[in-house]
Amino acid sequence: MLRHSQLLQFLSRHATIFDGRYIYGDPAYGIAEYLLSGYKGNDLCDAKREFNKWMSNVRQSVEWNFKVMKTLWSFITFKMLSKIRLSPVAKIVSVAMLLTNCHCCHFGGNQISHYFDLAPPTLKQYLDTLEVVEI
Image (tube, rainbow, N blue to C red; front, side, top):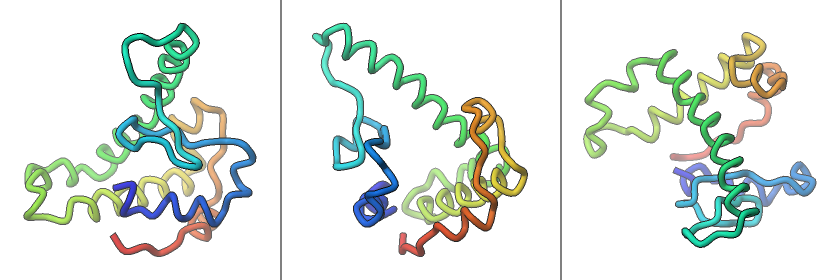
């Protein structure tokens, strides 16, 4: 999904928006210029273990958005979507997440934005930032 999203290419073209910040991703994604993940292994120093623990809590908040998505668009949980080769799962989930983000922007936030005390962009601001990509 990360490869198909072309997110890393987008980030390279818009490097100034990061200002020394990174996106934290699943360890399966590895490390890239603007993407980092937790430390691997069982023999970690206390600082690395604490970092992993703290970032694990942040990762859980990302999963909240998938819960919101499944609540808003319950059709994506149908068993037919689990048949990966028979339905365009990546496209359906991508569109559902886009609509979830639009819903958040239109209604001025959701439990996640409130938890982090961050206001979402307006719907127009959000849609203006999107680039069309083929998935």
